[in-house]
Length: 478
Image (cartoon, rainbow, N blue to C red):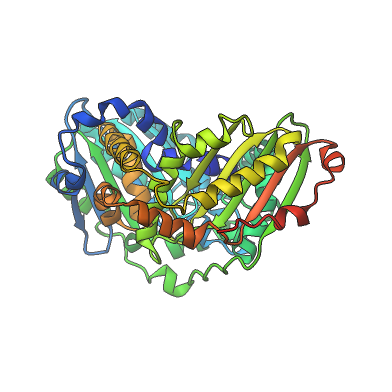
């Protein structure tokens, strides 16, 4: 089981999104696309089958030939975004408790023995806006896989002894995250960026909350969020959709619908970032790490901007882009990347990179100048846009070839913004123009409040006479 920790989220979420790194590797294949860039929705709709059971459970099936295996995934709209400060980190701890003793398999080893008998490889993950549980089985064991998940879902016992043991495991993950030199930088930036919403962005949670967790808190999470009308079942692989729908009805059809959890416990609005701030930490490192973050668009509030954000980031991250030539090839930055992470409740925009202490001020100034330049006419060329759009389309096609990756991708988008977003993603990407990219940068980046975080080698803050006030004053001028 793994948590998407803040550092991973910031530097790799675009790979989660559509596999950006693979996209560049596949760029030579782009001209050979059999499906036009603006026609992938039709292709996906022919492939993906969907049905909603009477209790509200959405069942999504993605049949595919080849290897006779399938991934069965249960996705719940839970995760960090549902956490008040008193529950910070408990969505993840609940994920750990999911695979423990339950009413059908009351002895600790029974549940694992059943997984072995199915030949199942299983895991789970907690992110900001979803929790998912998945297993891969041979194709004729799909219904057995569903029953395996159902046993944990509805019969979890949350035994005191198991909760004590699993709490130690989760705290061990916390210790490992905390040992990273990036942990303190990420945490301090997170507090500044999100304010009172921080517990709803901090997947790993709060040590004191995890330490004092009770079985009753686990039951509260289950009863509020683990209901069919807040969940989706995704099956991808060598399967027949009608048989899957029938199996899902047999297995989950009597799972009782619950009250809408977001009416019972509404998610508060993210407060806007009112002013720029600086963060400085010193660690036993050699290079200087810079991490600048803004509030980006929320997927429901400004969906159009999320597509522009991805193209904007992809163009700037191209090794041959003007952005990279001006900042990296000049030697000011050892490396730099731009990232937007799509979330429904405000996704962060991040520019992160590394430089040296003596080049830090000049590197920051050059970065400000280059971000402002992205608003100039002609900054984005038609050729650049077409290249990154084709790369995204190729990457999407590759991801659809792997049942597990396909299930994870669909589950993520179903939970964050809905399946329709996934279906229309490539088509919407293909529509983006330089003006839309600049409108996005103007609205969310250039001249907007941000948090500038810098991690320095020990002793460099005093030598450079660098202050957080100075960093906060480096507003990007349009």
